[in-house]
Length: 436
Image (spheres, rainbow, N blue to C red):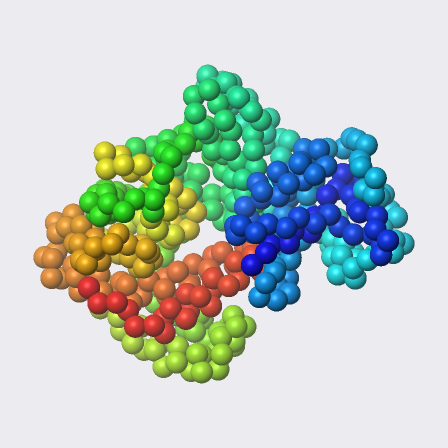
């Protein structure tokens, strides 16, 4: 599928447009190589190559699937204020004059009108990095912090990602790569965890607990997803289990620091509202899916109560644990991206990790389960752990659905960015869980 990027390249006073015989058009770039819509570095590079402009992509405005062969993505891109000379057929049009232009594509006119009416002046509940002035302030902070910690920049900070959940930037220094991450207030606990527990989380150069900013040296070049070594995968799971076991006695402290409470009591209390038919319909589920989920409600509640009877302490649960989030090698793995983390049943983490592309080994699934559960034998015999693990895998999609239903989606100004995650997890509840 071709990705067609239509860009609103703006300054505070003007919009960059192509003057064609059919009318005015937004600049367009086509990418044959797929990438996530929130990964904005390819677009920034394309705009720089085409127009010689240094830009920051503030946000994706909307995505339109025209057919199976192409997808149109509209982006709001901020350029420097200087209106440098451009090639023939490309002009800066004053924002005040846009309404009177003759457009070649009605869709372009509609998107620009919506942007002017809502996105440009609104700026109320959107992510801070969606605002034009934010990048300058953040870049200055990165540069200042790196200088104070003895880093020398080789090139300016480069924007990699922008969406409501976070923005990520990369800085090339003489000491290696450095990454900057900013998160919204709903994920502030990620910054607190990283800054407060350096022995367990990514190494840290600097943090701003008020702005929810992290500045970190690269933890490694490759993730576990790049490895086909089953022993490496098993070692990573053993280390992750040890982290959860070590943090279990500190669960109350972590809750006090703002880590969300997703313990089994909270899960049970949230089932009724989550599986309410009108909510399921609003999430996009079909009537037959709603009926099936309703019929499973009592069984899910029973499984949660059974899991509560096992002597496994609540601890830190990652929330988005898969091999691509694990960097490093067996002597030191680093688990990154703790935005979705909570205090919950620790075994929930493995549902999606074990659904990944596992190393090609006939017993990979069983061996990885054993590697993860072995450190937990201090709490219960392996047979009981396996029973608890099976219950947790059944309930894990419910846990993740509740995170989105109660915590993430209500706080996203642009709900469309992550709305598909709720029906995704709900539909997983309709699948049979894989036996241990």
